Structure formats: C-alpha cells, structure tokens
Image 1 (spheres, one colour):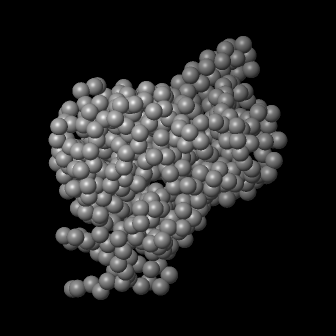
Image 2: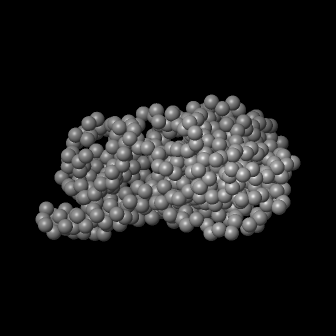
Length: 549
C-alpha cells in the first residue's frame, strides 16, 4: 500500500534528550532541515546527567552557547568536592575528600579553552532546546512516538504516532538518527543487538527536597558523598541542584530488579544521614546499571547515537558526553553526503570511528564503578576504637587513591583517537598511548586537533567546524595549490590558515595539518603528498586510506 507522506524533511531525529537536541542544533547550524520527535512532553523527572565535560563544552563554544550553560541555575559557588563517609553523615566519619573548585573558581586547563561545567539535564536540555529551536529548518514535536521505518534507495519513511490525537503520520527523510535512549525503539526496529554486561547493579535513585540540608550534619558541603559501611560501599548522595534537591542512590539495593517500598527508601536515607528528618520525595527511579555497546551503529540510512548505541555506568559522567561526540562525528558526514562531496564510505566511517570510543568509555565507566565498590567487608570499620580508626584511615586512603582516576579523566574526555579510521591518513609514527587521566595534545591523524591560544582570546579550535581547514605552520611558504585544486574539483570545502604562533608550531608538530569539520586531524605532513587528489578522495570517503599516503 502506498503511504501518503504527511511530512518531508532532510533528517528525522527520534529522541529529544541532550543527544537528539544537540544533533538537531548542529544540523540546523549546518543549514540542514530536520524534524525531532519525542514521545514525552520534555519534562525531566530524574536528571540522568549532570556533568558537561570539557569536550562537550568545546562543542558549546563552537555553537555559541557557553554563556547559556554558565547561566544555568546550578550555583556557581557550590562546593564540588567528592567525600567518602564511613557510616553516616551525622554519626560517622569523613575518611577522605577529593577537593574540586566551584564552577565559578574553575579555570580551563592548558589543553582546552573551556572547562567542565556542572549543569544537570533539567538545566542542560533547555539550553540545547533553545539552541536547536534558534536554527531555521529545525522543528521539534513532543508527544510523538516512533513506531517503525521503511528504507528505500534514497530515503526512509517513518511511521510516527501523535500521542495526543492518536493520528498516524508518515515522515519522509533522507536519513533517520535514533537518539532515543537505552530502550531505543529505533535500535529495536533495526534488530541491532547490544553486547556486554546487561546488569552491573540494580540501583534505586531517589530525588528528595530539603531546604537547609547541610545544617543537619557537621561535614563540609560537597557535590557527592559516598557511603561505606562494614559491608562495603552501598549508597551515594549528590547535590543535584546545589540548593534544596538531592539525589540519593542505593547502589546495592538488590541482587535482582525490584521496586523498593517507601518505608525501605526512607529507612535507607535515615541510615545514610544518621538521623530521621523531614523531606519531600520528588521521584523514585529503579534502574539497571549496564555495560553494553551496540553490535553496529547503523543499518542503511538509519543510525543510532548516544544511549541507543551505548549504555554505561554513570561513574565518570561519560554517557551523555560520549553521545555528544557521536553526533558531532555524524552531523558533518551527513552534511557532506547531502551536499554531494561525501563519498560512499564517509557515513560508513561513523561506526568505525565511534564504536571503539564507546567500547573504551563503557569499560572505563565500569572500572570506575568497581573502584567505588572496592572496599571489602570490614566488620570493625565503624568501631570507635584505635583499631576502628586505623581501618578507617586505611580504607579512606585506599578509596581516595583508587578513585582519583574517576575525578581526573581528561584523557577520556579529550584523548580519544580515531585510529584505523578509513578517512584519516595515518603516518609512520606510533599511535599516542591511551591514558584515562593524562592528556598530551597531538596532531596525530585521528586525534582531536590541539588547542593553542591565539590573539585576542581566540583558540585554534575556533578555526574548525564548517569545512576542512589546512593549517600552515611554518614561516616558509609551502606550496599548497595542488590540494586546493583537488578539493575544488571534488567540491570539498577547504580553507587555509597560516600560523606563526610559536606554541602552535610546536604543538602541531608538522608544517601542514589538515583538520576535519569535527575538529579531528585528517592528515599531516611537511609537504603535500605527490597525488593531492588521492588525499582529498580519502578524507571525503571516496577511497580507502593507506598508511603514509
């Protein structure tokens, strides 16, 4: 039966969480029309994310929304320390503390023009929604449910239900991207399986409201409290809005999925705080912590991104930030394909580049969980004796040392490299060593192009985003005409920038560095290759790369 098309758009995005909204905004920023459908009304009952990582903030800088993120309601003077508690807040002991500056005090590290931000999902989603809606050609429809999709040679047709009217709409688009979370209907429609561990823990999150909560105990305020008892680590408490709302997570609530009663929840909160007190429970969410990555990230003209493609423990704050990396990688490739200069392998490279990053980040998040749960049973941990004090000191020192890896994770956020990418030209140098905590900038092909401060507060990162950029980092005038002729012949957007900045010349390591629209290095060298047309064909996905080409 021929379907009557109700809506035609360039790209259909399913899901209006942070990943879907960011994709819509970036597509609109690239002047690509898109429709976003979301089955909920957009209300955030349980903020899943609260860390906006440094790489995501670099994307926000590109989009011009840093000020909006910084203006979010989370207090910029609220302490961001991570604290380890033996027993309860009131009656127990502080056995370790990792001190962090407040958001107002934090300054960028040398490797980036930005720093991380504390902006929970109920504050970050509105920023991304405003960004998306400010782009012409972007349309958002809430209370619209994805039901299915058919694929054709040059388009897809998706079946969408308007939940308010029960009307069925058929949407024709060039591509569909599923950003619809862990239970992704798009992924399920494609029959894509998830690989890994489906149940690390069964956890219950409780959001409660209490004004003046800090006055209930004598511990210095912080962002996150981690509670340890003689049985081990069992719960955490997070300052979800820095004012009157808190997220209490019962990590070891059960060895199987079940809903806790309100009495059980209130008993657990009383145990962690150490006293009974008045508060209002705003929401309760039982959930399963997973370590899963999709076996593939696309099927024909349909792609998946964010939690639809990878599910990880929130220990580390990598989930949403990994999803934002997905859509920045995918968006420019869609733009290139629609514009006609992207080759057949360009969109295929999305999975080749992003799936290894997902595997890496998912494993790191599970490692962080293991380190958080690392204290073994210690029957005398809470004894008010010399032996108990010694055990607490040892437990706190060990936990503080092991969990530094979660708090110091710049290598995870900035150090991912698209090694083996079919659209990056590797040279003869070894791949940079991966390190979760440390990050050394490099122009190695596939790596994020380094940040170096230029004049008047500009960063080298501000040069990237729209098309390819050839950085010329030598006082000598290297002949680059052949590359521009080849790019022009293929329709590839290319500009050049000459930099004499000493720091840039040193950091970029070569006289010529070709940077992709997503800010990753495609190729580098001291002279152009003999056949510039081959180089252009590789970076646009029209032919495979060979090492040293």
